[in-house]
Length: 246
Image (cartoon, rainbow, N blue to C red; front, side, top):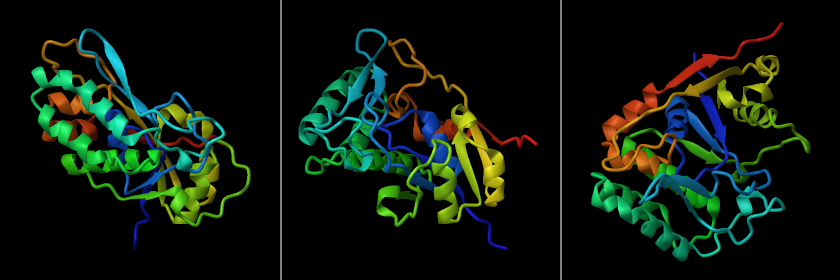
């Protein structure tokens, strides 16, 4: 008997936090959800790293068309080369004390393409290079590139159900923070098991800096070897089936 795969479906995020990679490691296939409107001031084009003096700072890639009238799949970087240069500059303070600075810088260099202004492609390259570095399987598809036949109007909790159903998922995993949006009974009607994932904090030493929780994966990788990070990704997550309400 062939077991149908477990899917994860998330918007494209810019070097997201460790919990994002916990989800990727837990599923069989990852769907990059880029077919709705872009939402400004989200994790799609920015994330957090340590500030050289105190606390944290944003690293971001400015967009040429970052408004709610833009589809995520159509979001474009304002200046890929300038964003690349700015990113390297903001990471440079780690060089003094972070033991894995060179390795992380190489991952960032691999992710940027100064001739490609697609935000989605940048985010996906970032996920792919980090997963490869951590030896996490990353089988993904980008929703805008698929021939999905979706209803004209879908609620926030219905996109995952329709996509999972059309692509043949046996189960679907979502962060527990979105639990209220989903109806387990509707998933069960389609023969799809619904599960929720709860990440837990992974703390680590940060040299002379004060540790800040829930930072970009780049910060985690600066201070920890790949085997420690991948173990944390797999262990700092709790997955439970959705409870049906009769």
